[in-house]
Image (cartoon, rainbow, N blue to C red):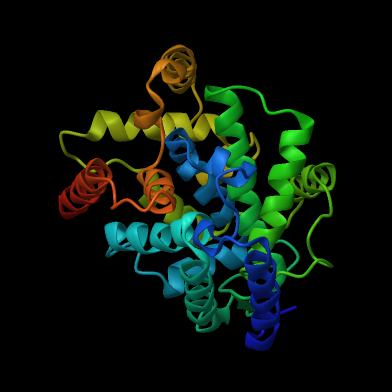
Length: 318
């Protein structure tokens, strides 16, 4: 079912009532005691960004929509910045910022419609897709949830069953910011795991030409000084992918890739948890905590953000 503006506004009104009744709109939809903030604050989860993107692109609707409507290939830094500005506003922003971002994302998605260019999985050629379709929205969110938990447990430590249940209930709330109904959402963490694993194993994820093109664009290294780093990240991302999707997306998984993957995991498992929390946490989370204390944005975070975006722009120009 496609999420309409009236559907979204109903969910947003409900969220606003809940947050205002709790008495702290400045803390936003979740707040500092939530599992959403605890997991999302860790910058190591960004190592899984490529995995989440490729899982999304394995869905024919998502891959075709990105190819036909996104400016990723011509403006990757801009796409990166716009996407995470919205995500950080939804997760770490105050109530007004979260609601405003939810409306902007929905309005943008409403323009993303089209037809599949080839028959893939259960869908015939010319099947119509819509970015505001609940099932498609759920899959995109699911890739982020599963990847964030995988990264957290790989590099930081295990999450208890209660932690995962609390995180999923936070994500059910997050889904309302996109208009996804309770009828579509798995009710529990266990149900979410069943949904995710079943989707990965099904033909709902069928790699076509659009998927392979975008995957190649994202993980093929440019011929510059950072080529080794790009290849390292490609090997790491490939290692985290479900086994059946690696050859379909065109990624090698030979001895050299396995060695890189294993060495990276061993090194980061030892070193990452020893870093000071300020170096591990995302600037958006640090800024949110500063906002709640009535302080200005963190200058170190602003510098880090500019450096990352500057590096992306330089490499894509190259």
